[in-house]
Image (cartoon, rainbow, N blue to C red; front, side, top):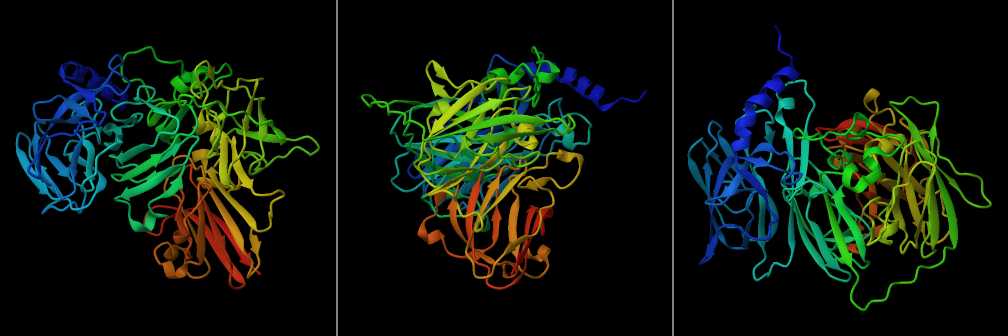
Length: 636
């Protein structure tokens, strides 16, 4: 009798259960205390690779067997022990491999200042690495094993941790947040079983991640370390943060210099970012990865009361289901919550009366199949005809800087929704995170079917922003509950020279190419520009699981070569990121290529110098890239 993959998986689970139960638990590591002993300019650390049980959802819920690092004589931790030292310190690192059958390959970040960046450690043996980092930096160390499948879960990529090098004389006053992912290796080994991916920050998955506390007006300094191979565009709700440093990111992938502002920052695998921000307003705020699959609930890890099928990850139903309590049952993974207290003695700011009122009505188009629905917002304003953008996309909102606005979200769907005003500086209650936003007894509600919610804010700056659903994001974003939010110094805006390119997932999903739409279209019409005119190109990325989408603009030559030869690209001038103007030093013309990650916006200035065709393309990574969508342009 042939044994199918699912039966084999069940057999592996049963066989591994007794061993799993006997493993030591991996403790969550808040990265406050560095490992090892620092004496006379030498940091000595002994690490041990071992098997452990990791509980990403808290100790009371089931866990999984993983490989983990432990400091010698200590319990294993997730992530691994924090390696932290001043620049110029000599690092003596001993790595012991206590995994019974697996060879370990341990890697330090390249260029740290050692004779070697990696070492191979056979089972039952130990090896040493030495390095002397001369400059400050925020890095990840990690290790891989030779195992493909040795147990039921086979979760990999968890042998990792943070390596922080502080500038000479620096006194650390920050928090270190380490991103990790664990992916079931049964899938990569060829078994046709569902993939299970777990995402954690400092060893826990939301809503079990640590709640951070602050007081309004505090300066918060974080070091965000991506100790995983995936890209994570990390987004802060309600505020800008300052990017003080990026480490390990190739120069071609960067924009801006230390000190620039952002609300979303793309962090490639095994790189780090130093950031700081000031929460000016009290309330509850989120910091999370903007790839939807990284923040939705994972499948149960053991015999617990599982949700009904329609409430499973990405599910929905008319009564609200998992999203009726969205913050706690509709999100998981790479999410941190920050509670900001009001500063003692500070008076609450008076809420200005709205000068302008809008209604955004969420509707579903009946002519589309359940597997590829079309949902969108229709915008109503007194004295004007309803504004629509067509199936699978919502219209652009044009607001004026400094003008108070009230926007009533009306839900005519058969499922709950909510709207997050991405990049807008506003009060927490109106930010759009149901079940978490607000403060105290005033908590942001989900917008239930046949209900409404009024959001109020005053845009403090002109720029390119986004509004989008914050409920069941993978499905509702694909369906079209998202749109551009453009804030202008004055209205009406000059639409002829102000051009928007909104990347979103194709409504049809994986049922057919291309993977993306631009402004709701998979095959955009030719755009006509005039030579010598100055244009502002606004790019918005909300393209689901494609965090490395690369936009190029070329005037001649082979478009494939344009991905690798800057001489074939036209030039544009970067002017803003996430709605914030770039420093003057970064507003110089450069070749027209930009990685646009999920939740990022970029503004560029373009002056076509001669008539002829231009070619704008969006590609995925790889040599020359895989074309996913193209916008033909003709310059007259």
